[in-house]
Length: 468
Image 1: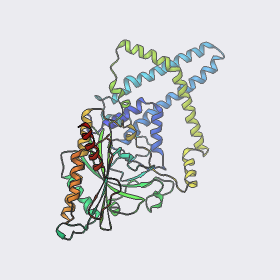
Image 2 (image 1 turned 135 degrees about the vertical axis):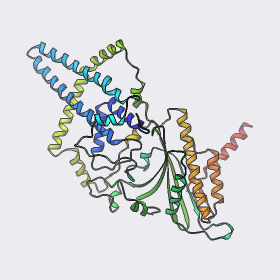
Image 3 (image 1 turned 45 degrees about the vertical axis):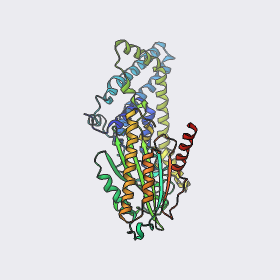
Image 4 (image 1 turned 90 degrees about the vertical axis):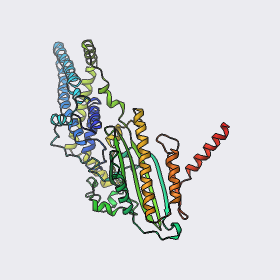
């Protein structure tokens, strides 16, 4: 019986099988890298993926050795007697046909929608002893060391950004507002979101730091040749709430996971208080369903007798080229092993690069789950659910911020009016024309971007006049 949320893992395993050895070796290399950070993998069982990749590669390596030996013997014996070369050629073709048939009719069905069970896969593919288990789940990672420009790439595509400031000195009826810190507002968000039991809502804390800055912050890089820290205790995370260090920034993440973890809507919030101004930053991300190429196994139809005959003919036609490619891969892997033995392996080269590069980037590579994302919806209902989750979360978060400020005695009339405009107008939608919004609330508040709502309203009025 399949467990809820295992669909993304199943599709990743299908990709590891059908996309070939190159993808499996790339995945294993990613997690063998001791010098790069670990990015959170949302809805993906990384250790199971590593187990299956390692198991399939172990099987593949045996066939590589056989095909390499067969090719060498073919050329050696063909010079003495062509019959021997012909026999080896036929045996090689039949071996490749057997290998392909086993993958097609024996291994692949275990990963189909109807047959897949995580427990049985774990028993068939035990975790390899020569590898270290990875703590890449979202529950295990709260420090995200990123690379490049966008710090939120592990959470999907950015769909909207909202930033505004509130003048905390402005109060209704000339009253005095109650002082507070950013931690109180974060706790109010936790309480409000946890009270909503209608959706599968997750609350997480993240600290984002660039890979080039991680060694400049004490305690984030145990050793210059090791991975950066990927998890901090709650007490340490609390110290970064409302912090002003530009190198590492704390965000509260509220996420809804649905459709077997194929649709994940996340809102990241950051609050800072400076000079009696509350600065609010909200970013929305959507992790879209998995690409169609990972669903090839589910789209296959059961082959009849003549279909299997035709399939076998095609396999035999490509067998000579596939076996040569397999032998070349084996030679490439052998060269890599010899380089490691001689001290010129990837690990040693990376260590030298770290020594020679003061500004070395320890940032995590693109997460596998994000690589799998199709950046589009497969169904109309997925699109509707994604939009509804965005709007519901946005409304809940904005209402919580406003209610909290109102409780503290801050004048929120202008902010409440702006909230109504944002939510009811539906201006910010995934895939729409308007992707960012900045608001300023209060007499002394400030805005960094032009008022998009006003511009959109002006364009709408102009369109009405032209239509008239």
